[in-house]
Image (cartoon, rainbow, N blue to C red):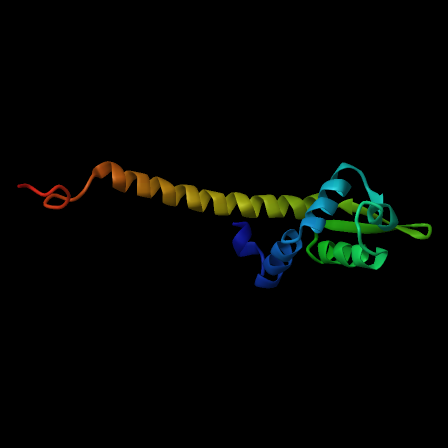
Length: 120
């Protein structure tokens, strides 16, 4: 299980990274094609330094990588990190689907004998 493979600090970093809409958008943009940090900054109404901080959070969570290209830093999606996040969420989905299935089974059985409708 991915949940068992990840330490609490890694899980915290992953969910913290995805908790912000700007960071989710950065991941989406660099998944299509790598962009420089300055190129990313053009899309947001915030300072270059703020975009750099968002990229740093994503990098700590292993969702993006940075590569030095001349004077710029090229940001790319880190597909292994994204795959780990996907597998983690798939595991949580499976847990919840199993719970819903058990509830559906219990409801299909109806109330235990002696419970339910009152007789006049």
